[in-house]
Length: 58
Image (cartoon, rainbow, N blue to C red; front, top):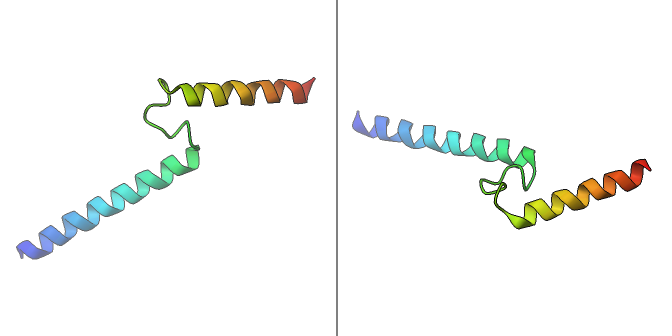
């Protein structure tokens, strides 16, 4: 009986981690990152993307 409970806990945790990974991977690299607010790389790439979007619309 305890083996079944342990197995269910392990499978439940694995499913939760997989779902969380899939949700974050759909958001993209910087928006899915937990340190995106303090990461200089994400801020620089966001500025470059905004600049590229502005050039396209002009």
